[in-house]
Image (cartoon, rainbow, N blue to C red):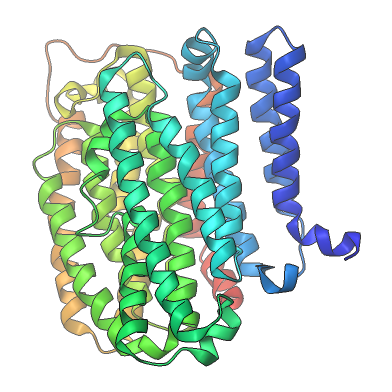
Length: 471
């Protein structure tokens, strides 16, 4: 294999180099504040390099492969992680540097992202599982990173136990599929897989394991507690980066490897989609803590994502990737506001936001934009994302499901407007005082807002994704 072949792993190799460089700098640099800036700067450079053209190809006998669509999705994940790092830089410098854990935070997050790279580029179940575990184990440590808080330790325990069960379930499903086909390579399984009770059971177990990472009902019980207990930057990472990568690999496998189970997978996705939308929305109505509120919101959004997967064609692929891209920027805009307020005041409840517009109008407008996008109100990006998802489901004649989805959009609009009402219409005797966010926080929120507006208003983004959406 020549050097040109290894360049197909350019994203992975550069991220690994950044990770190792930070470890070396941790040893020799005494000023950890500067090291935090260097870490964010190096990852920003990695993100920029990622947008350079990369050819399609495969390595290691088909274990690793990359396409233009996968390369684009890695770039979306990179931008998302960069936004999270910018928004979390103040917390890293003020808290983690004092606890001598700042470099460890970068190591865990970059290691997890590296695992997601391998997972979505996997060409067989072995590479998939290695990527899955490499992405999950560092997240468990990140969730429990605030060791001085009991709720963070509890969240870490809940996540690692749930993650271990989900991984075991997926691996058991893979073993059953291997038993019926004699291969772990995706390209070979497509032609060898036939309908049988054993292979069907393997598919269900495999789907269940990935459903945990996406927070699909009934595999969602861990989500709210972990989101609330984890640091806000880690919650953002779980909500968009971890979930986005799991959605892509599930879609690839369902659309290609599991072709013989089209009818069964369609019925399964149909039922899970309805349950996920209703459970996520109905439980979100009761939440007062903003992190738990967005946790159940993210569960509901996962249900909407499944609508795109029901269209097993190019339209379905493009709508799912487009919606996940919008979701990354939208959710990070909302979490950015929550983190900015929490870092300054420690307040995270909805009632604390009453009268926020009078003291911090810019943050209020960003939160309103993000919530309107999550609700699917035009002309922001979330409207176009949901519209294309509904179009994908309607193209398969699933008009009842589209109607149910519209009902759920109405429910979600109600609880999103509860936050907007608290911010703009409610008055408080002790509102959150005016404060100035750091430059990095402002930049992180600005990138998220620009992403929401750019992807929604600039419609050729969807056309570009549609052209790449061929596995």
